Length: 313
Ligand SMILES: [Zn+2]
Ligand SMILES: [Zn+2]
Image (cartoon, rainbow, N blue to C red; front, top):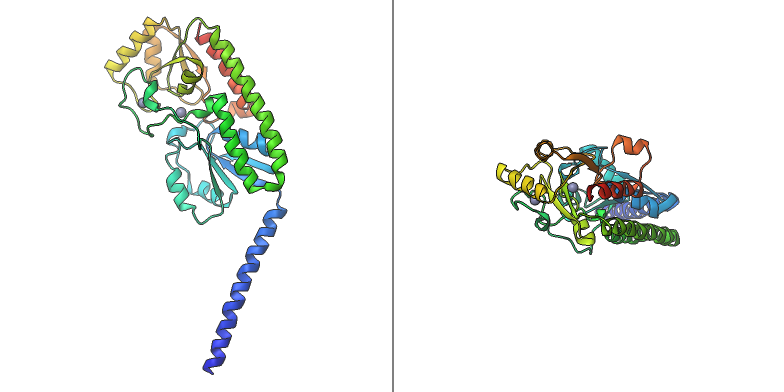
């Protein structure tokens, strides 16, 4: 009897093992049959690049709701469930997403692939772009706003392209071709930035959110930030006085706000120096209006160039 039950349980183990293999195999086949990769991203440009490179092979969606404050975003349980079922999750890295390590840990047994957009890209220190204080940092030492530099965006796009090829090697030719045309568009955008800044009489801009450090490096613009890297941090009275001084010294006529945040402090400075408000788009999230008007990375960046041209006069 003992031997018989041993054989029986062995059989059970073996069949369970075989069943397991079959289940995996079936899963793999369904996966292959399904031609579209489900991709989630954090900031908007990652979604736009993933779609532009992926074409009909990729369905991408940002987990950020329209107009959300990207620097303090935390995913909900529902979002975590979506990520668990996705093929890939593309994030910036560089300290942009405070929740990323915890999310990776939670989803480590899921089949979702994590793709770091800024992998291998030399990052700026976030302190280097400050006129006033170095005290207000709450999301890392590096400046994460890499996507605002069209040339560095080519590297982000290349990271995405390489990851998509690994996920779907049979679509390699399409991904390579789409990446090449995206790269060309980004190079043209860079030339448009160069042209505007090179002919501008002024190099300083006064911004409410220090998101444009990479323009400093690439184009020689000087960004004077009102609220530091995080829009929730307001400068002290002393820092405020310094900012107003600097703005007056450089004859700054415009204060640049953003599409998703308008800190009160920027209003104070605007009133103090009598400068007109302009809006730059940091592309972290789209607004409802952007979505309705079907704007993309390039149409928004071209609007940014127009604003920059005015601000640098
Ligand atoms: Zn930002
Ligand atoms: Zn700071």
